[in-house]
Length: 219
Image 1 (tube, rainbow, N blue to C red):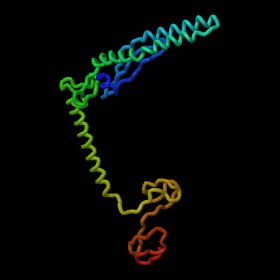
Image 2 (cartoon, rainbow, N blue to C red):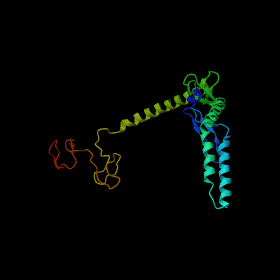
Image 3 (cartoon, one colour):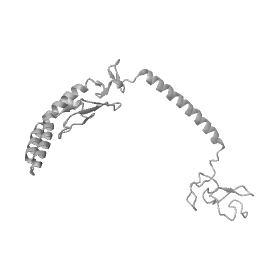
Image 4 (cartoon, rainbow, N blue to C red):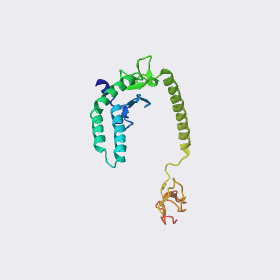
């Protein structure tokens, strides 16, 4: 039962209890890469025989205009009574086979496939990543970080020419179009709220004002 606990989160039950295709099969997955391995299919003979008996009885009795459901149900009942134990036994065999395809990491206790196993260290690659792969990944991160820093510097330099004090409307009040800070709406041409200055005293004049609030000059 301890083995079943180990594989409680990374296996899928593919067993089929009834019919001529009845049998046991389980699919196990790697906790790191999610690749899967399926145990060999084991036929559940009792259920298959019950399926064949049911079909044969139904055909024979059908030819006589009668029903053989009683015989068929009895065969299914006998097969079903032994299914649970047979399934558990097959599961234990599947686990034994799966342990040859997976490695249990002593650090994180996950089961991983051979491709995700650091054989030299005896633990999984999540706990002990491959040194060469990590070195290449670190180089790429360093390259990306350096380029990002240079790009940031270019943007910062370009930002010197941007007027941060100018008033901008990002959405047109008339048609609700996004303006991206332009003086006129790209959707309807409406002049947006932008600071204007007085020609006499250079004071800021609010939009729609008839006179300058700084010197009283008429607009």
